[in-house]
Length: 288
Image 1 (cartoon, rainbow, N blue to C red):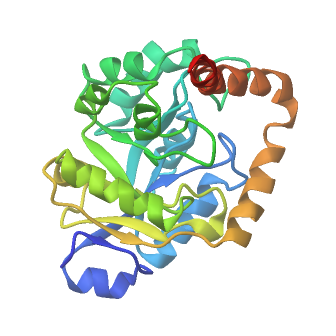
Image 2 (cartoon, rainbow, N blue to C red):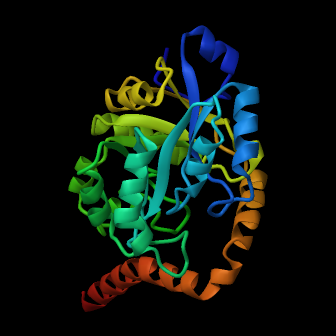
């Protein structure tokens, strides 16, 4: 079986191969999604897959999922938005480990727009995760549109050094919100640097859930994360079409209305390096 398949996940077929599937990148109403934890768990159970609840800079959603004592495979996770732009997925083996990390480094570094960049840079975040028993993954490494929301996008733009990838255990090779060509580039990046691979919808709507999955022969969190670390995982899925992406973006934006001013400031900070770079290039060109 191929390691990366750009096709709709067929759960029965996946199970026939002795594999279990999980959407490794999903958001709930504990951050910038309207989807409740109960609704996400209900859909996952009906369809027969697990999920990682990876709310932006928040862990209360996955804690709620565990409190509900579901029999769905729930992987403790968080998506951290770095001050300089990149999004970093971090998966933990237990809720107490995730909670300790969150309290120690994330909660106190959140800013007035809670789902956007915290006060820590990418380098600072990955150095912190390096001290924990966790799996650190570069989310959508080539970013969204003009935004610096991918690690490799910032490396290519010379805002970060290529060595930053040494801190990552894995690369998100299929992200449901990205375009096919950028996901293909992400897959090549993982292969080049010999990183583990994950896939997830980056979903915010219930209809997104399960359209991109990471597969493993393991049946529990320990085994699932270990398979990613050992490069044994398989990723299957396909991207959302443009109308669905627009619908999701419209709904997500409503979550930021009360944070308009601090959100604009975060975007200004994160895009300033691009503006400065363009200015320097224009200045150099004029000197010739």
